[in-house]
Image (cartoon, rainbow over all chains, first blue to last red; front, side):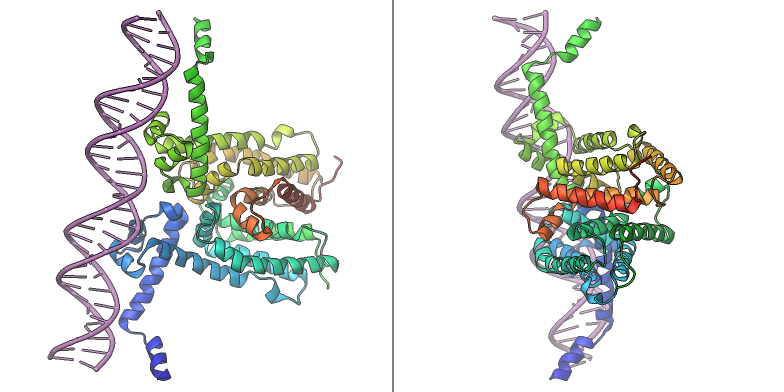
Length: 219
Length: 219
DNA sequence: AGATAACTTGTCTTTCTGGTCAGCAATAAG
DNA sequence: CTTATTGCTGACCAGAAAGACAAGTTATCT
């Protein structure tokens, strides 16, 4: 019985492989369209066209727009939440932890610019679909991380800072390279931000944060 | 002749007063709606409803959506450009100039959160309506301001920094209090950000930037 | 007071959009 | 090989949306 169930889950037929591929392609396409237009501005038609399938076929895979949108958001958030907890790396020096944090946040902006933009649209719009998630998932993690930073301060490992606003600043400074990329491109006189630009940005932001915190190298 | 023209311009009849008031009300309402839904997601109907007039009447004042949207954007940008040039305050110490800059940027987030959000939606969407403006107006000012910061560095008034990315970070860190306010509210456990929150945020960001720059108080 | 201009609204048309449904085609299971 | 399941498409629908148009109302000018 158990065997049968497992087999059923694992079996990869021609169809199931195709399905997975197509779903992935749809999600990527949806990400692109939602990133540009936000939820209400995006049409199923446009997403279907981007994915090179018919609208009806898109609806076959994702029966309605809201569901598709939430899937796109969820994919992004799962990646973020996974990468963005201080606590998981406890035991190392603040310097190491914060450096890696900024680095990883910046990498997310570079690798998933569209997901970041979808998220940004959603938040700016007042997080209608995401409010509950932020309250139930992000806030607890935020509170823990703030406590950790406070303990660093009281141990004298970093300078006195406002921990909450430290996070807001780091998030804003790193996400801007995904969300506001067009503005940055224009001001830097580039057609798009390459690896090098992101490296420079990462160094600059890391340097800002480290200086602001006056982090000590030794515990 | 000249007199007549001037008189015509200045004369404030019942109608012209009403017109100005109504136009202003429409623009404020449009700002609210565009801030929430972005350009393509907003309907003229919704804007009309928010302004408490009929859709046809709205169209009488702003014959189409694009025009209305551009007016809202332009209003915001005019305010920003006016407040956000370093050069206008040349002669003072970097510390004073940068402090005021951060302060003013933060004040804009506090006073015009909706305008800021409209702008953010537009940029995230790839700045379809604003690209030209950014190239022709923002970039030259940016280049000048970057040069000024470079001169500060070479004079040893502030620490070695990446000037371009300094601006990106300041902008991101201050705008986040308008654009991402809902997220910040949730994480701070508040229903909305009050004067005090903005004051704390301003102090935190200012402190952050000043430490990063190691600005000297004396020229 | 009458003519003119400014304002407001109701009606209508066209296009777009999310979504349904019936039926056909391809694949998998027995 | 047959049957059942899954995948896909064309035709269709109801509601929303932008905006044109005409007709009526109100204010201003002479």
